[in-house]
Image (cartoon, rainbow, N blue to C red; front, side):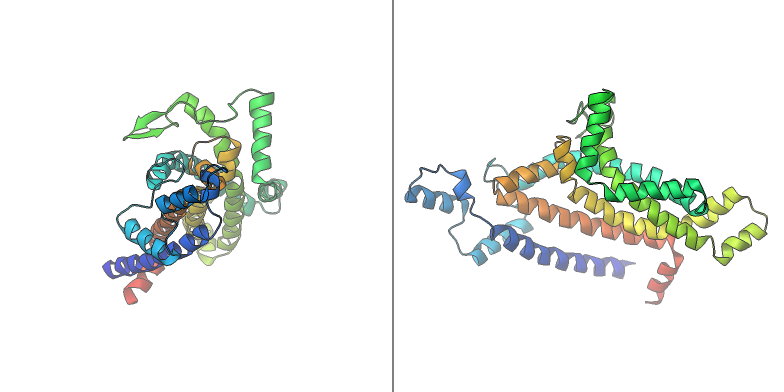
Amino acid sequence: MLAYLIRRAMQAAVAVLVMAVLVFLGVYAVGDPVDILISPEADLAEIEEARRRLGLDRPLIEQFGIFLANALRGDLGRSFVHNEPALRLILERLPATLELAVAAMAIAILLGIPLGMLAGLRHDRPSGKAIMAGSILGFSLPNFWQGLMLIMLFAVILGWLPAGGRGETVPLFGVEVSFLTLNGLQHLLLPAVNLAIFKTALVIRLTRAGTREVMLQDYVKFARAKGLSERRVVLVHMLKNILIPVVTVLGLEFGSVVAFAVVTETVFAWPGMGKLLIDSILNLDRPVVVAYLMLIVLVFILVNFLVDVLYTLLDPRVRLAERHG
């Protein structure tokens, strides 16, 4: 197990280094932030002074070397716009994005797995076909359109829920969260549902496919032949094997939810990292964009590692293969 952890840590370090190069070159090769940050009436001397102050007068390879050396110390640069450490700006918005992502994944899991199993067990009945039709809609409808329709129905027409913002927050272990207050939950519900629709459709289809495959296995037939109740067969013998591919995909999808919650955060004015990213892209605030992308890379790597650990817990064959390896 120790050798496995060391090997994964080395792979993660290589992945972070490669992504650092790609992210730095991709972001710093686009546009000139000086054109946005200074007055259009500025003369050449003022432009050169601004470039020198921001470190943009140095060769690109030197800029990358400085960036890499600072990154190893946890310094990803200072925001051109806010004049604050870029990583601090990102981390201030991270709890809001994580709260939204966790709520969305919880909805997707709690709805998607039972509905997917029901669709698999009743694949030839109207209920199963209706569930699959709903999952197709979840895949097909644009995310921003779903958000606007949710706002129109539940906030404008019915007036049940607020249309945007994060609502009231309270500290939890030093981090501001909104799900512990009624007002915060009301603000959280619509964006979480909007973000969860696509993921719920994905979980339904994965679970249905797993159910259809597992229910034909010999151990399931044997369990039924022993006279076990259908509930025990489904919840004990089938569910654990269905979860193996679902957990793998959901781990990767959680990273994508954190990374790509930009549309939902923009539609619902949710004060997370996505909204900060959009503002930083519009202002060519390169350090904030780089800090965001590097943080997302670390989130994906960490989630992948946790998925591998969960996979070994769910599938004993993986542990056996590691032992022989």
